[in-house]
Amino acid sequence: MQFIDEATIRVEAGNGGHGCLSFRREKYVARGGPDGGDGGNGGDVILLADSALNTLIDFRYQPLYRARNGQPGSGRQKTGAAGEDRIVKVPVGTSVIDEETLESIGDLTEHGQQLVVARGGQRGIGNTHFKSSTNRAPRRTTPGEPGESRSLRLQLKLLADVGLLGLPNAGKSTFISVVSAARPKVADYPFTTLTPNLGVVGAGGDAAFVLADIPGLIAGAAEGAGLGVQFLRHLARTRILLHLIDVAPPDGSDPIENAEMIEAELKRYSAALAAKPIWMVLSKADICSAEDLSVLRRRLEERFPDRPVWVVSSVSRKGLDELIDALALAVAQIRRSLEEDETYASDQAALSAAIDDDVLHSALRRQAERRRQRDAAKDDDDDDPDVEVVYVDG
Image (cartoon, helix red, strand yellow):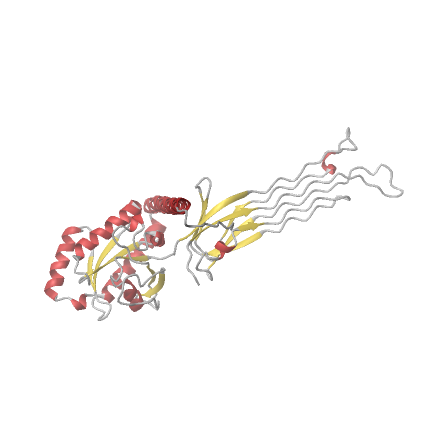
């Protein structure tokens, strides 16, 4: 199945049913009086988080979701049936944003969590409610209210504790395949990973955390080079970023300069995301001498003095167990702090909100750039007399 992590949909709630204008007409009953019933409420459109889903691809083919209208009231004070709600299943980790106001409506981060994104219209009232001692035959009713309608941008962000960051072929996929049961594609050419992968890592006893691997970045990713930065949104909810650095890049480039380049691309995408805890990991240590590793580690520590530096090999498992245990302890400590330290939790919430803003505006910039490229291509076709262009709706 194709991995789609962003989609735009239209949701329309049901209209409320109209109130009924009716008078009781029954044999042997004089002056029956008003008996118009109320209408039914319109149905809501509700998003439901479902852990069985992992892509938004269905929304590319069905972008419109409507709830049922409420039924009008009728005589004998009968209330119209309420409109049926429209339940729309989305993957766990979906953020919902109003396309017009760019307001965040909510996040669906747990299986079974629901979010009302369009409320149905209120029912109309029948003439029964307007009778009084001075108005015994009211002819007044109220119409049902229209339901809400809006365009929504859905953004899928994977839920993980630790996220892997680095160049293509930095060893991220091999790393996650060794420390977890995930089985991503591993090959000796760049951009082997085309979609994010998740793996659950056990670390002694009941300690465990979720690890996310995303396609690698290259220089100019913020401008769309390689696979661009579109998958960086999947690191938005991680607690720690693990920056893997190849100790001996195939192109002969300097590992420290490569690390600096990745850091620069990350900051250009989101300074808030770059403010998360980042651990530096020199990977593929089995292909480098101990002396060269020592020099690289010293240079890396000098360049990033405030960050922990690890040296690992996924093939020989050198340093892996120590790194996994340290990550498990750090993740557990962050979880406790979020529950027990209100100041820390508030600061993390503010950081998450800033990251969400950066993710949204990055997506909007990419959308505008794609639109500009399409318009430029159309203009080029129009200027070429030898090319016949046929535009098909839909």
